[in-house]
Length: 288
View 1: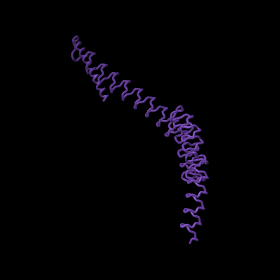
View 2: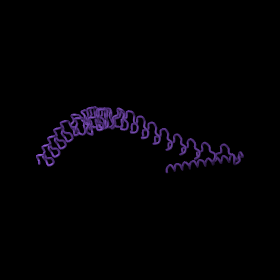
View 3: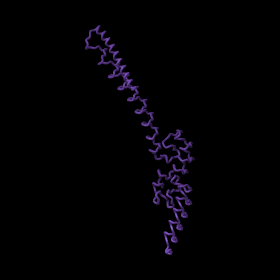
View 4: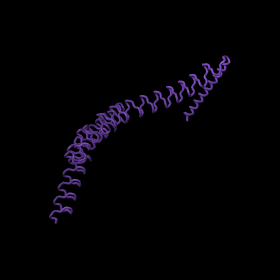
């Protein structure tokens, strides 16, 4: 509506200007006719009727370099169809523009990444996405070394997203850490595996259960002595997912365990019976 009013005003101004010029031209022609006889079909070079216009005429069919209506625009015109080099709307952007459709070489959003970018969509050979991080890795998107906002921290930062080699929180850990999100080159978590990995996606020829276990393992997760992720634990770990040979919880049991899931040859409960058992389900020849 506003544009329509402006267009109407501009057209009215041009019409008034044109009529004023025609009136002046008529007066000039009348004076010239009185001094020099001219017929109706011959106009002097200064005559400007509606079929001929000078360079200063600005009606809708011809426009000078200063005319800025919707069909012609000067270099300083910045409406929606033409934009100068400093215009930064959504259709044209300068080299410093960093919105979602154009990005400079230092832009690190999710659609463009530099060789050092470590987001989840592109990774270099030394890439460490959100499940694994090197000592210099900080957040999952990518930040410069001088950044200190909440997503990136310097080597001396110790908040929950980045930590120094002595940090042991859940997001980044050193080679001696044993949490579930970061692992050393010998780690065997489910998303990255070295040639010696033994997670559930890769198993050696000696595997026997569905997650891979060594010949001495009997629990369903199996971990090697050097593993430190949530699916693998060291030999000194005794948490709920991995147990040493002396553990006797419900997931792994030694040969001396006698709970309801594993029984030795001397067990005589209702699910396993020795040749000397005489319960109602099994009877010896002497039971007759």
